[in-house]
Length: 256
Image (cartoon, rainbow, N blue to C red):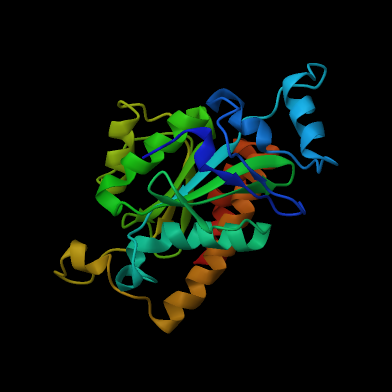
């Protein structure tokens, strides 16, 4: 895969123009500077602002929000793909197009409030999610504390959320792959979405690929809206306030 700057087109919501990098004039270290609400009057003005203006504060590092799942219609709307659904919910609400395919992921860039954000849905299949996530984090030099991974969890009751600042993989193969690509580092936030336990003696591998019942679909849609609000609070107000919103006993009772 060619990861040089020439391979990307940056097109953000609210901007009438997009910038296609036809030549690798900007190094990877300056890539995040293209997360900007400004709409310069000419490409010359933009070039000048990038190369000569040292009076402006350093651009904010983008956040990366990753939803885990499996690609293809066969797996769409199944329990194992609730991470994908959460990212789709965020993208739709915030007007972030997910039309690009980069780093082995369905990929979009935009803003939540004034905070630059990258949304990604790895297309590697669940067990190799780290190949995609590791490449994105490395290329954009994203601090792990600003990487949020969203995934399904059988240890939580259906449609319940948990936001944690760090932790292990908990037996989830997608998380296991990501942690391996982070060289064992587990210090990144994760939003767990409960899918419940399989009934009776049903094989867990078959259970996670089951579609939702009508009632479950209604519950999950409510949960996805809570997850959207949790991500907004996380990026704009910080982890503690977001965790309080997600993890409070009152919220659990409302969702139960």
